[in-house]
Length: 451
Image (cartoon, rainbow, N blue to C red; front, side, top):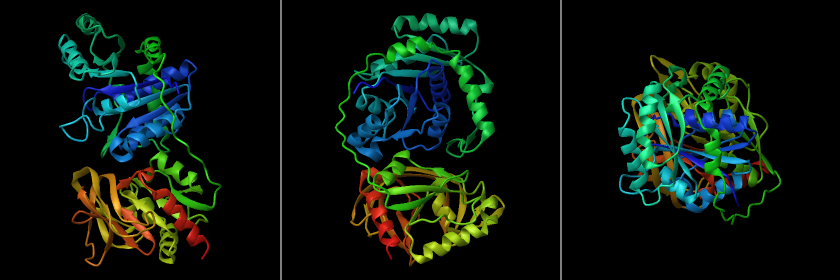
């Protein structure tokens, strides 16, 4: 398949990749192109920005979680627009560890055979930009770097000095973004703020993307994407007719989901029905429940006030409905969440409390599923990731865990995946297509529906 595509990489984190990627998407759409966004790595928030501008759901590309074949399969099967744009993660060559290229933005550019535009922060430097760009170009024998964007240009004189310096390395400059405080997007916790249902943030993102697009040479960018290297499409996917309904929590409090996970559930026979733990009074008619991550602590007051929803959810869980929850979903199922000087009452399915911490836990995770549960009928190796500023206190010694971790902290003593009734809840996030998770979850929902 010939997929016009491009990777936006950064020299480091914080160089403005997300804003500039949104600017490129905005400019391409103005030219009449439909754009499919992707994000390298396990992040949930940046993809929501890309989706907001492109008006298409964004997909993650993470080699650690997905494996090489599944990553390529996801990229090809979801690249149905005129152009595919991939935003990188961290620095261009930053991978799983400091010893290899594995799971880096460069690794993904190699797997997808994509040309790369490198974003550099030009503040407080000029001629040295050429040395930085040359270093990135020469560090790997096939860097795939086809263009440069300089961010935070201070003046016309600064721009001129940078252009003169970069002439020597013969890489086209496809953007000079002026330093502008209006282009700074608000951050929260682990990255940018989720765009879910935030009209003011949508408007700012649209304005920011428009401003950036005017500083891009979009014709050169289009030229770089021209004549893409063909990719082999070896995937054979089929979609089953809906057999069960799975209720998915999706609002301002819970919105961290891999789009591939939702697609996997549908592909295996699930009809998805979205609901709001904040606004709705009860769980919609369903055969299973999925509660993803998010910011339940930020909206703890609203979640606490909706006692009807909490009661409805707990009753269904105690009745044995298959319920899968990750991170924020896990927090919601505990007795309470301590946030600042306040304690918010939650569902109370798990007899423990959630308290916020100052230290972030950010890891890829690896271990074994050791107990049969609603997403796995067998013991096997798992890979996932966790990122949170919270921990569970007073976890009972009698608690049953489904996962034992070699890498990652989990809930308690490198254990994760609390089991209660037919509920599985973890700090770790899984990629469903890395095993039969979606298939098994749907199978258990069918079993519940036939009781």
